[in-house]
Length: 46
Image (cartoon, rainbow, N blue to C red; front, side, top):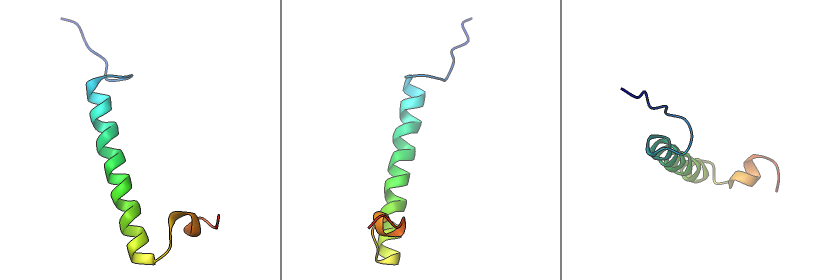
């Protein structure tokens, strides 16, 4: 039996990457709504 790794460009890794990206985007939008500032303003870049 071949033990498949879960590193690299696999379907497993890409699914988790997509899920975490969606979660990060949602958290960013909610943070902007709650603070009234964009991400660049919060980081002091604008």
